[in-house]
Structure formats: structure tokens, C-alpha cells
Image (cartoon, rainbow, N blue to C red; front, side):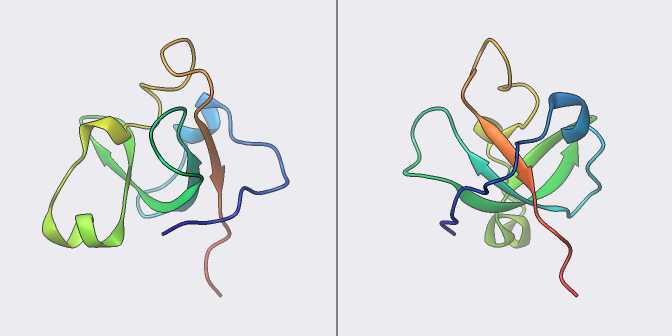
Length: 87
């Protein structure tokens, strides 16, 4: 789902690595996507990745959506923001 880019600073790699399973995030990928999208954080092999609710229901893991692997020199413009938990 498309989402507006937040006005507050994105998370650091260290902060991303502390996100709990199921945390809601907005990710602006360095290449490919047309703007920021909302995802949930899931963990596999000790690494967080972004997954849509539909992909989670289907059990589909998109290896291009690892959050920490592509942050930094490999993909310097990928940004991740945490969203507040629903009330």
C-alpha cells in the first residue's frame, strides 16, 4: 500500500534491528518502487525484512525486501520509518 513519506527522520540500521515481529513500517526503496509503501516487519534467519500482509498470509518472502542488508553502501537511499502501533 502506498504511503506518504514521514516528516520525521528515518531509522538507523541499529534501530531497524530492534523492531519487533509485526511492527508497522514505511519503506522508501532506493530503486524500483514508486514511492514509500507500508509493510510489517518479519524476521527470518536473524534478519528483518518488509512484508505486505497479503504476502505474509501466502507465506511469500521477497528476498529483495531485507531491511538491513540493503541499507548502507549497497543501497544508500533506502529509508525505513516506524509507524505507531494501532490503538
